[in-house]
Amino acid sequence: MLKFVRSVATVFVLGLFVAGVVGCQKKEGPAERAGKAMDKAAEKAGQEIGKVGDKLKDAAKDLKK
Image 1 (cartoon, rainbow, N blue to C red):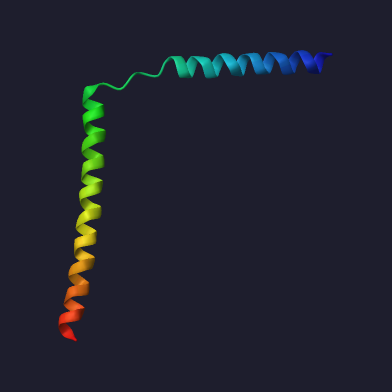
Image 2: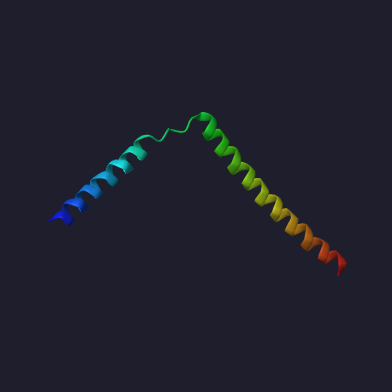
């Protein structure tokens, strides 16, 4: 019976901890959303530049032939 009470108490305390952590998280503001959008745009631009670089390499190889 004592093990059961300890288990219930442990689950209860952990539940309170999780609820406290989730409840205290701040909402992201406009600056953070803008920063994330800029990060995504920069990542996409980097990928496109990589694709162009690959095409230039292929074109250079074709010219050497």
